Length: 314
Image (cartoon, rainbow, N blue to C red; front, side, top):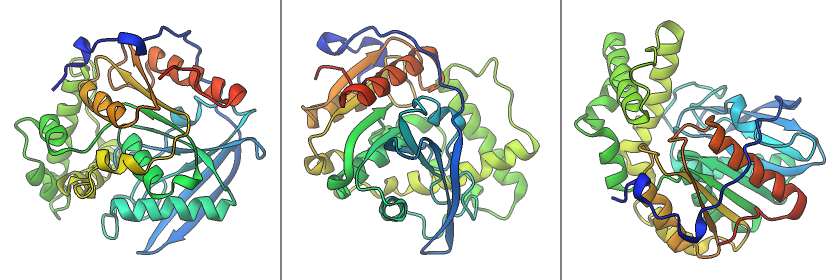
C-alpha cells in the first residue's frame, strides 16, 4: 500500500489559499421522507433556493450530516441538500440496519432528488461519502453535474482489513448488534480507540460517555453492518463501476498523511478517472475540519460556483 506521506506530488500538487468555513447557512426546509423498508430520512436544505444544487453525502456509514459538511459551501450561491442516510443522524430508526444496504442508499438518493425536483446536482462526499458518490454517479450519471471526492475509500478487502488491524470486524459487528449493553459499549470503545490511534489523536481525545457513547454505538452498528458485507461493492467493485461515470468536473482531494483512508486509494481511483484532477493536501489526515482540507474544499467549490469547474488541472 502506498504511504500517503511518500505519495509523489507530481503535476497534481498545488498550494491553495486557506479560506475559512462559511457561517452556518440558513435552513431552507427540513423534511421527513419515508422510504421503503420502514426508514424515514431526514432531508435538510440550506443556502439559497435558486442556488446551484449540491448534495452532501456524509461518511461512516452511519455518521449523519454534521454542520461542518455544509459550511464549505457559499450559502449565497448553493442550494445545499443534506440527507441523513438510513440509520444515520436524524433519520429513523437511528442505528437501524434492516433494509439498509448500498443499493438502498442509491435508490434513496434518486428518491430525494426527484422529490426535490432537481434534475442535476453537484455531488460532494468524503470517506464513505466519496464511496457512495462514485457508486451513485455510476448508477445515475445523467443526474451528475460535478463530483468532489475527499479522502476516497474504495471498500476493497485490504482497505477494511488494514483499518482494523488485530481487531476482529465480525466480532465487533456481532457485539454492536447484541442485546448486551455492556458488550455494545465495549465494542464501540475498542473501535473508537482504534480510530483515534490511526488519526494520531489518541493522547488528547476524551472517550465518549453517556449519550455520546450511545450515539457511537448506533453509528458503529451501521458502519460494521456495511463493512462486514464489503459495503456490497464486490461485484462490480467500485473501481469497475468507474467506467459508467460521466465526464463531468471531478476533483479528488486527499491528505498525504491520511492513515484511515490511505493515499493509494486515491491513486487507484484517479487511474480509472483520467479526466479527474487529483489534488494532494500536505496535511490534515482524515480530519475534514483541518484548515488545509477546509481551504482546499472551499476554494474548489467557490471556483465551481464562479466558473463551472474546480480549477484544478487533471
